[in-house]
Length: 323
Image (tube, rainbow, N blue to C red; front, side, top):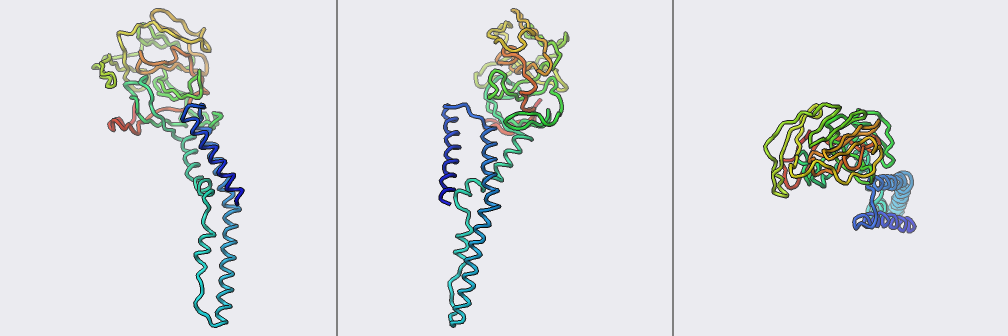
């Protein structure tokens, strides 16, 4: 048992060290991998507890009970009625040691979180203003992990087909230039589409996307008003922002895959979406680092469909679904 205590302390220290290094920026962490490893490790301890350690403790407790019964019988023959109670000793023997409390004891919770997060719904926090006014900084959202097909965690291999993303869907995906980062944007172009964003007007396959002017939007962090519009890109309308002070010309586009599919000019950009890829844009059109700058999102990078704000601690009215 001493060896198991030392081994468990080392395992917990390794997890703690990884989390600490990630928190302080020494390494680039991977929560999906961390959760998978925690599930495997605690699951191994849980099996060992069920198959070996718990039966061993029960045998020891039964031995104490048998010895107590034999002792009571001997004392009864001697005419001694008052005997010591063995229940306290049995309780101590049956008690789960600390190193199993912190491993096998946590397994049911960890495996539930792992399955929920990997295959059903995953929470995310909106870190930037690129999706204003649809999503605000600080919104805590839920992402549906099965709509576009279930994927295995960590390796991201798809095991069910699901639906295809449609124009207007809000997607969380792994950022193509740095797949360890998760981004959230709106699907503007699907495979085969020609997407044009010229003079701040969106056109898909030669047809201008319907927009209607709305009252100006007050961005509370900067205390500035921005031009707001309603856009009918998919089945349901959504809102977007435009800043007339920002020029239509795009600066800083990288040399991404399929760059030859895009044509840049002083008026904006026109791109032909390749097979198996999607063109993404933020609703805050002049404050969004999106496909106009770093290219197309491969289908393999899709994480899931964002659909619900479950909390915003600064504004509880934000809770609810969104388009």
